[in-house]
Image (cartoon, rainbow, N blue to C red):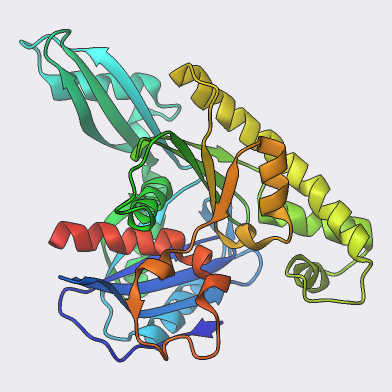
Length: 357
C-alpha cells in the first residue's frame, strides 16, 4: 500500500474512491481560482478474490480495506464519489424522433427499456439529452442503466464502511472528465480512444472533438498478462507481477517480451472490435490518438506495441501533471510512475468539484 498526505486543506474538497478488482484508489481534491489541488491520495491492493467481475465475494475484507485506506489518507472523510463498471452497467447513445406533443421523458424511458439487455424492472435508468434538432424533432440521448442488485451492493458496502456515497458515476465518464483536465487549453479535434487497462476488465472510451461519444468493455486486461507469464515461464503470481513491472533480472528478457507481446496482441484484438463498433457508427476509419490509463498502462513495451499495431499515437495518462500538490506529498516517489492508476479516481473528484462550483 502507498500512503500519501498533504498539508493543504480547503473547504470545497471532494473525496472519491475507485473500487477496482485488484486495488482501491482514494483521492481527495479541491479547487480554487488558480486550479485544482490534491490534498490526499492513496492506493491499496486487495487480496485475491475480494471482487470477481462486478460481484463482491469478500465483503468484510473489502470494508476493512476501504476503512483502512480512508483513515490513513483522511479520516475526516464521510461523503464520497464512486463509480461503477463491468457487466452490471451499460451506457449507450441513441437518436430518435419525438413528437412535440408527446412526453419526451416517457418515450426516452420506454426506448431505454427496449435497448437494455437487463430486465427493466431490475435496473436503475438515468439519461441526459445531448442535442435537440427542432427541424426534424430528433433528440440525441445518452443512457446509463445499472443493475439494482449490483449498484445496491456497492452502496450498502460504503455505508457499512462509514461512508456516504453522494454520486454514483460510471468509469467511462470519469475517464472522460480526467482527459478533459489533461487536454484543457488545447483544441480537441478528431477521435481519441481512452483505454483503461484494469485487472479484470479493459474499458475503451471514445472522445470525438473533445466530447464523450461512447464506451465499450473488453474482457482481456492486466490479469491476462499475468497468467500468460505464469503459464509460459513457470512463475508464481508474485514473480510474474515483478516481471511485468520490469523488476527482475533473473529472467530471460526476450522470453518475457515474447509473453507480453502475445498478451498485447490478444488485447489488441479486443480493441479492434471496439474500434470497429465506433467506425461503423460514425462511418470513419480514423482513430487519431490512444491514451492509456490503469495499472496496465505501465506494462513494458505496451505503448510501442500499440503504436505499431494500431498505427496511431499512444501516450500514458498523467493527470497529476495538471494538479497542484504539496512538494512533499509523494516523498521520493515519482508521480508519473503511478499517475495513470489514479485516472478514474481523479475524474470522479473532478465531477463533484465542478458541480459544487
